[in-house]
Amino acid sequence: MTNTFSISLDSDLQEMGRVTEFVHRISAHIGCDEEQEHHIMLALTEAVTNAVVHGNKYDRSKEVVIHAEYGGDILVLTVQDEGDGFDPDSIPDPRKSENLLKPGGRGVWLIREYADEVNFHDKGRCVEMRFHVKS
Image (cartoon, rainbow, N blue to C red; front, side, top):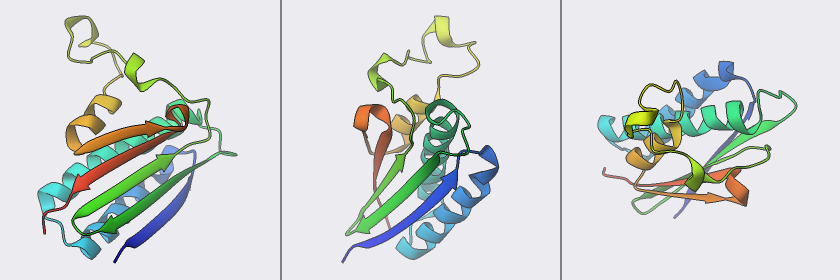
């Protein structure tokens, strides 16, 4: 049986509290442990922040949509924005010495570190994150 959850957010970082509540609700429903909830929270907040800041450029007329689907031991989260998109492979590695002191550029790397699988769709406007849930 598959369970689904969705939420739409304004393109405003003030909405991040709703993301936290969303993750808590999903985590309670699927029964993941605290460490896994932390990984899900970190990856999702990075994806939503990127969608608001870089995708929708804080344009409150544009939404960020989060969709969660859980079945078996897999949680799939997608974050969709209405921006112009980007090439995720063009993001410089934030661990390289020339990028260490840059103020940004770590979000996609963190998402890839904390999710078990990451795919980008719709020219980068949609990030799909998969987590193998341990209950």
